[in-house]
Length: 342
Image (tube, rainbow, N blue to C red; front, side, top):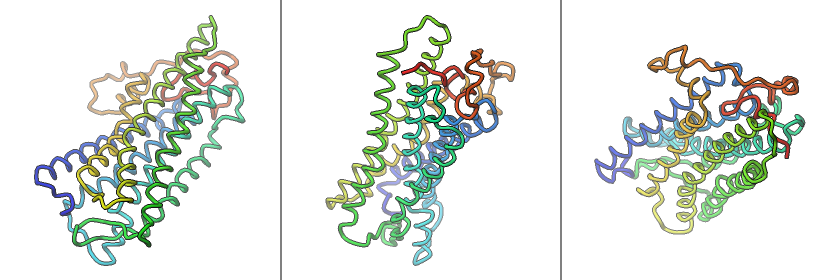
């Protein structure tokens, strides 16, 4: 793959960076899925959204490795077979599908958190398990359909030994790249900023005043949740804006898109997918203990890693919808889902 052979040292550094991030991504996000599916108390709509985010991040990692690591290990086929391999495996199509599914899932998480605070007792306006199934299908179908051009126009270039895009017209990229910047960046980031600004304002600047220990506990868990999801969204924005900007600039100029700057931006994209499980474990004691309990080489003893029972729930909480708010979430006790009224 001569396109990325700036020097032998650079090639080794790039391959090492991608390899490390991909391995961390796959291990961390696999643990996220196992924590939720192996512990009944964690099977809530919010946690299933986090599982969907983990699956999207793993999709990015798998196809990033196929595009940027495996070409150094095997000879890419040429001709029509090479084009087909580019369209399905070594091209960027599935990387962008996973990325867009991740962006849409982050928007859904932001909406779920907003609704949990705005309508804590109205299950009709919350994301239940039944609604979640439809949401997940819509997220992945939409992400795949939007990236259809990447599947159709990927071709193998024998000169650069790399998969390129042969667009149907000269100005197609000038439309496609800005549109992708809006769909991947402007659209989700704007929605998240709007929803989280209202959430942060409610929790920190106009919290419900109550002397009840239960209410104070609810508010504390709501704030903890807000800090995590805001952090995840900010990191997504920081990691994705550079690569989106590069594609937009390259579409309107003669700038060589596949350069060292572009490669660095792709490393940031991979970092974004790998860092989310770290954020979950740093923010949540319960989630961290569940993860440690899954690791065979962990020095954490079974008794020490055992999760303590969730705080007692008031009688009104016990009657809540089991699909939406009756069980502990990854980063919250059951009390959080009955958070303060707005």
